[in-house]
Structure formats: C-alpha cells, structure tokens
Length: 387
Ligand code: SAH
Image (tube, rainbow, N blue to C red):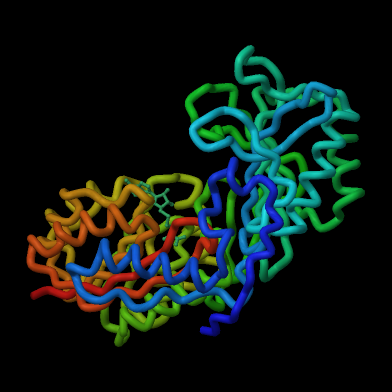
C-alpha cells in the first residue's frame, strides 16, 4: 500500500468546531505517525502493532454521508453535524471526508425542502418534519440511496418532490423515507417506506455483490475495507475444511468473502434488516455454505457451545464498544484454534485482548488500517491462537 505525501489543504473552515477531524493541521504522514504512537502505547503490551496502512488519497473517502437538518434564521435550510458535546449544527459544506457526489445531493435537498415549504425539525419545540438526511453510495456500482428521516410518514406533494430531486440527480437509484418520531437519540427509526427504486443499493466488495438496506451496517471506507478484508482472509489461512463463525456479521461481508475457502460459515448479527441482507447476499452470490442468524452474538455463541457445535475459527467485528466478557469466555469454551478480532475501537480492543489472554489465547499479530483518515479513529485486525 502506498503512503504518498499528502499535504492537508487546511480548507475546512469548521475544523475546530466540528471535532470530527483531529489531524488536519499537519501532514497525512504526521497523522499516521500519531496513530501509530497511540496504538503502540495502548496495545504494545500484547506485541508490536504493524505500522498503520494509509490511503493513497485520504480525502472524500466516506461512502455514507449523514447530516442533521436545521433551519437558519433567514429560513434557508442548513445541513451539517452536531458540534461536539452540543446540539448546535456545524455546516458540513466543506467536509473533506465525505463523497462529493453525496454532498451535491444534500445541497439540492436543502434547496428543495425550502421550495416545497417542508418544515424542519426543531429540537427545542419538538416540531417539524425533516430531521436528518443520509446518503449512501456504492463506490463500485455507482448506486445511490437517499434516506430522508422525518417525524411523519405524510409528505404532501411527495411525488413532485421525488421527481424534482431525481431530475437534478439522475444518479439516485433509490429514495427511502425513514419515519422516526421518537426522541431516543437514534438517528434512524425502524419504519422505512420506499419512495422510489428498490429500497436498497448494491455494491461490490471483495469480488462479491452486496445488498445494503438503509439501516444495515456497511463499512464507510470501501477502499480500505478491501485491504482490511484481504488481511482477514490472509490471517484466516483457510484450507477449505473449517467451520467459521462470523460474529457481529452485519450484511455478511466478512463471512461471505471467506465462504469459498471454508467448509461452512455461520453468521450472527443483532440487526434484523442486516441479517435479511446477509441471507440475500449469500443467495445472490450463489454461496450455499453460509447461514446467518439474528441474535445477540454472546447468547448465540453460548448456544453453540451448549450444543457442542464445533468451530475452527471465530471472527468477531463488534461495534466500537467491543465485545463482552461472556462472549470471550464462551469463545474459549468453543476452543477454536484461532480467533480474528477486527476492531474499530482500540480501547475496547485492549480490554478484550486482556480477557482473551486470561482464557489462554495469545495475540500473534496486530495490523492497523487507516479506515478513517484525519479522525482519531483506527481499525485494527488481531490474530490470536490458543496457547
Ligand atoms: N462485520 C460487518 C459488521 C461490523 S459492524 C462488516 O464488516 O460490515 C458491527 C455489527 O455488529 C453491526 O452490524 C451491529 O448491528 C452488530 N451488533 C451490535 N451489537 C451486537 C450484538 N450484541 N450481537 C450481534 N451483533 C451486534
């Protein structure tokens, strides 16, 4: 992987208020060095993490753009991010991380929402229609999904609105209205209504085609995801006889990318929409040896252990908060030869690796990937084996 000299153009006027990017003041190499130092300090007790692999072009890598909508005093619509630790909205117009095509769609939406006289949600008064907009793009397929998050399913003039949006952006392949009237802190509700197209997009990753629904998890940096999944495949070193558990499987991307080299793949995932996507993804890629289950990864693994099901390799890719002690104990009881831990939260990874060491798994290697350039996040893949 090349790691070219990329000077930050310092063009983001909201850098300080937004808080998303931490390293925009220095060069890209500086940011990678800082991440290496951080990872070494945190994970050094388990071995030497490999230097983080950077991107050749670390800008506009995000295939998912998510903004909160609000209204300015002059009546125009503003979209952006919440300022760190507040509910103030920072404009995202100049964001250096987001896909530029998605940003252009959001500009149009700001204008159309106003010209169609739709209201925008007001935090304090708890009234108004549109709350958020999310755009997802398949970088390989070019398919684009627009998700409008609103407090109500009733959208007067809906057809004309959809038509106007599509006219300006013929690249949009599906538009979904996500109804979320609740104040739970969750951006997306569970009620999706397709306004145009199939209600999902397709993308290609690791040589396979994937269906992605509005609420399913999908890695936000597809360029680095290819590298990450290639690393998982290399570390898995499958011979074709193994049963692999893909825990926290999302739409099944990791498990399905390994299925042709394994005897069987079992996936477990909490989000029902993602599980449905995973089942569909197996079918449409003609993969017959992968099964996906909806459930909590810890409970599911406990069930496998009680049923004395044999697994040769456990791959876990939990959310930033990490896995659970009970999962790790159950993993030790399942006693696979190897475990591959994919983590987007180095702190929780460090905590969980300690637990793995307590149940006699050893960290054999740690590789880092810069999935989130300029931010203070990093992705780490660890190989562990049974001591
Ligand atoms: N491996 C996938 C998804 C990783 S993201 C990929 O690379 O795309 C983590 C996933 O864990 C999300 O899909 C989330 O819905 C799921 N998840 C969160 N808590 C969970 C739990 N307790 N049990 C199972 N899955 C969970």
